[in-house]
Length: 149
View 1 (spheres, rainbow, N blue to C red):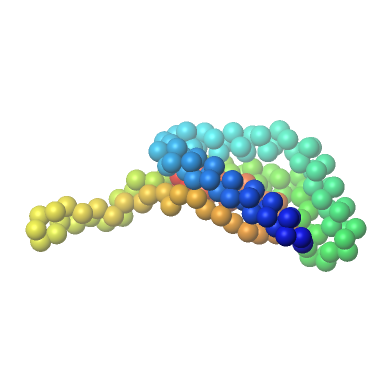
View 2: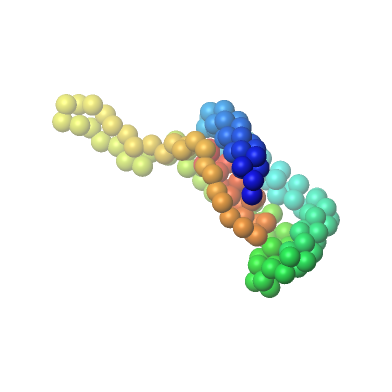
């Protein structure tokens, strides 16, 4: 990879990270109902876009085969109707989970009378690196959304 390519990638990732940080402030205060609704809409959109998803995935799989990548890699990359339905069901499952944001884990009163609470809060921005698993993107996004990240 050339230095110009690396610089361009670095600039792109930096810009995305800045935008994600701005969005994280807004997402941190989104209510449980709105997050669950968004996840259910994502599941419906995946089902509705199944044909386009399979078409795009077929091109990815063909490219991987042309590059002579391993059968295991290609299997992880390959989507079918059953796997797409599994993705949608996974999003629905996450939508039904209790919202962790704001949950009081424990609380106590210090010797000086100060009341202390340990409360779950969003971390902010989460970055992930993975390969050849198209199901990971919606699942990771769903978990981040549910936890306000």
